[in-house]
Image (tube, rainbow, N blue to C red; front, side, top):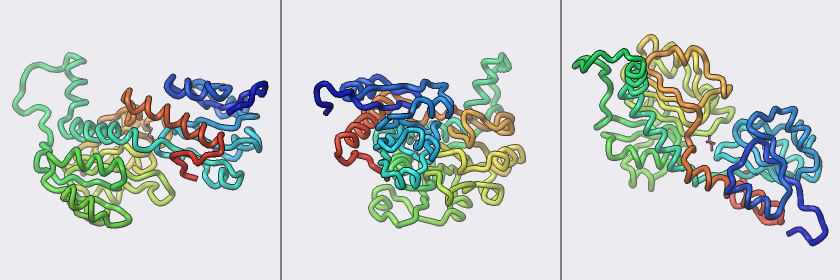
Length: 323
Ligand code: DGY
């Protein structure tokens, strides 16, 4: 791609990229890496001259960073399927392409949603914490009684790639699968035996509610106090999508007051901060945003992010362009 004697184009890897992606980028580009603790200010210092920025969900790609990079910037390749961290309009105005890494993390994220549903329903977090702290005094027929998921009604909010895979995974357990979607999905309904309902009905009827929609202005605070009070008192709420979908204080109250049964969360509004009320809430399994954290998924994401950046730099449509 780079003619002999010319300097390779500069790519800013905002934080860190696994070797699977770094090696591909390094064949064609010079790379500057911000590191895991790169601040917004540090990224602005590193950005000038970059033709590509490899970002991730923790990196705000805004007007200021885009301007710091300069007019030669061609692409923002996001190491994630979600791209709410990227100001798409600001990129469009500058003619900067944006790409993400879908598909390769679908299984990993859907599996984690199932893991959280099971862990929350069966009180795995508190049971393990008690054992490790030496509070387990022996088998007790009345201890840690949880919710059995066989025959349960599963509510899938958003039947995109991850929601669909999650529905496939829970099918063996589910008595019924309900889903919400802006458009009907007749093929998925046939394949999964799922029924499309509105969010209100899903919340009222489901034993397990799992969120699989992106963070947008429309989905902000999708689940707040008004929604939580309509859920069953034994129900489980799972969020592996994005923190802003759920009002953390309202969820903590609902868990404390017993208006829902349990929750399993992998994402938070101001990561890595976890709201204190959630840390203190009962029956709440909390994970540090590991939805896509399998070796297979993360290595594939790294290769895909590099492929997206390199395609854009050689004037070809990136395979996963979103803007
Ligand atoms: C994504 O891809 O959006 C995930 O949150 C990253 O794990």
